[in-house]
Length: 331
Image (cartoon, rainbow, N blue to C red):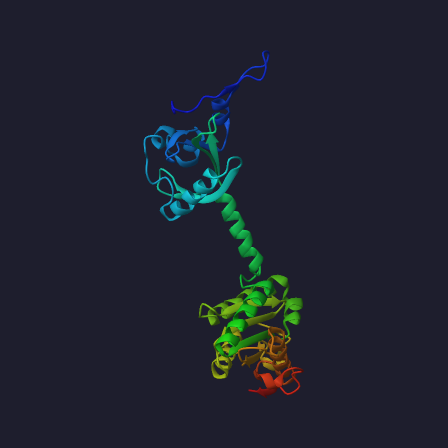
């Protein structure tokens, strides 16, 4: 196997044993590949079989398709960088194709090999399978952006999306609407029926918000507790009002028992604050924080007016700062 591999042995002293570098590579859990200056493999350690299913000799007889087709350009760019370094190595992350045809992600360290005379002699590349690590990191990234109970976006993800979409709305001079929903007397429901029933209720409500977020740019999020929000970019007042009413009605139609809500038939209801913000390109006094404040004011009006209703607020430049003149119209 790999008869062309350079079996280098270095004598440390007259009494110390020589170092068998081939034995070291073959004991290494990472795959070690030596490539000629033309970047063709001339040796592969046995670990390549464990990693990919390919026999080392298969790689040294000109096998093609080892690197993922979409990554070949990036792979050769890494070799170019490594070739230009007299010392050190170049790190790269790319995909390789296994014997079964599946792709795995690997982390590669590519180093230039030079003979004693300094003449370029090829490359040595070590490969480590990082597919599981990348999958784990991707899952952590999802968890960092999701509310763990409902699967909706969490407050951090919502805030980032809100800043981004408001910037787009200002640049394109498009309206942006926000639907803020707060469950009525939810704490009493939680106390009477228990946290398990409360969690079941929150998941059901989250399902309604997910259904309402129909377009790719729409973001449904749980802000915390029993408070939910739906971000609706490029949505005018009429559309936002309609969505808010649909959410209110859908939650009412769940018919979730809430005995302490006697004024609404002993079922769970929701109060909804809707705001549509209209800005202009350039300096603006409207900010995401002020849009949320306007929606919260509309929501509070709904709570004060008897709950289980949708209230609307329109926010324009003339309403800021202060929001004292923001127009509120209860439905």
